[in-house]
Length: 244
Image 1 (cartoon, rainbow, N blue to C red):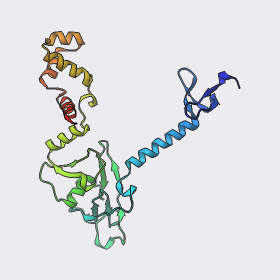
Image 2 (cartoon, rainbow, N blue to C red):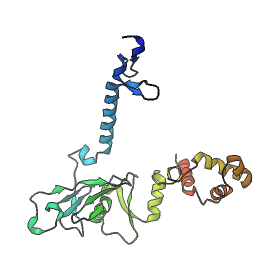
Image 3 (cartoon, rainbow, N blue to C red):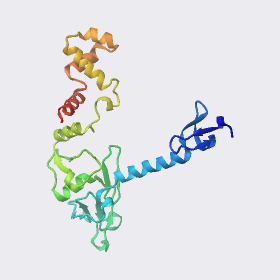
Image 4 (cartoon, helix red, strand yellow):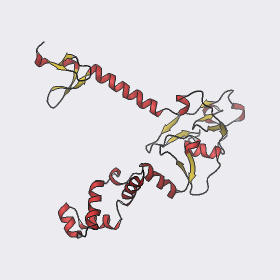
């Protein structure tokens, strides 16, 4: 096998034939590490991701766990570790169908990252609200389940509290999970560009001159200047800047 048909793997340091590598379709040449090292690295990444996503009871099966019934959902209980279980088959709360041992209700992550559980009869509820309802009580009108550490899938009781929408939005800004600024679906500018515009306006540069120099409309510059847009992104940047 000639040198032109071999390649050195940058991970294991072995020289292997082109067939042992994944090809770059554009240049028709082997790209990156060999297939064996690529597969090993991928498996390690998947394993690390799964371990990071494990709940505390999966990491330490011996940790204590307290269960309490969920008001309004007969036969269902929530634990302070964020799990839901049922004493009835198929989620139907009937006393003569009570199981000798409870079964854990599987939870599903929705498109916003929150865990929800099926409670039978087509009913579905967020796990965070179920845990708070079982241990703290029913919320007042307008209250939301707030995650203290910003991890939406962490439904332990110590991480949850009832809070107003304003307090919940403030937590999202502090945790960096609020969909605003560059994370917005319609964002066309970066945070660095917005900061540069604010600094130029503070230095006295006129709106029309600034818009012409950056190639954007005067309306967009005015909205950034007055705080109509990018207000929350700039507020979160200032909050991070004040943290030690």
